[in-house]
Length: 245
Image (cartoon, rainbow, N blue to C red; front, side, top):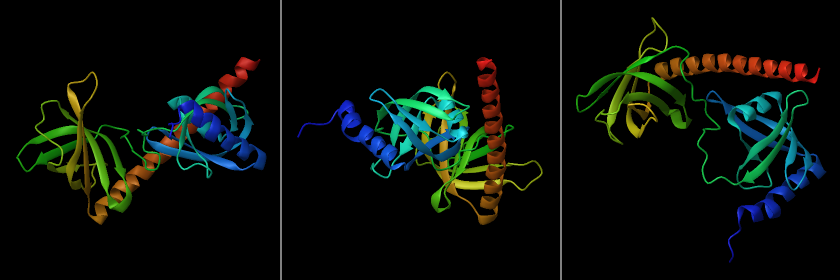
């Protein structure tokens, strides 16, 4: 059997799918992130052209597409998400023209869970069973399914950690509050580009009280980030209006 190329998939699967949505006036769903927070809304197919497809999207989605320079689309007629890139974005009418539709081999961003970076520096004490202890900076934190807590920190490049090493993290998300303790293991340790540090990803579980504290912190940061998103959108609309005059 001849393997389909990306062009074949576009012509035989993706464009016919969008034409079906256009004819039936049914919705697709867009997925993006903004500063680690998933942004997902339904969108309408406005036009289908061999070179690009036009969508009417939620205004916040338009901002995210500009920010990330791509988006992911879900259709009930397709078995997987489709990735696409913007041709143009109209922030006043919320119309986005997309092209280069692809079925991605992998998706780097988490489109379902919030990965929150701290508003202010958060110092994390990390120690292992081998006795190695460091005070490092928190890069991101998330609570995933099955009460799994993930924490990403930046450690020195020569830190003697390896995948599956058991570690304990202690840190204060809020000043004056009881410290959060996470017992987990190292999922990955990757060099940070242009820095003499590595990105250490730890997965673990916490006591219910600590999980509630983390979830409350994430919810507060999500609210802050959504206000940032709205501010960016309002500024983009002002720029759009001023250029028309």
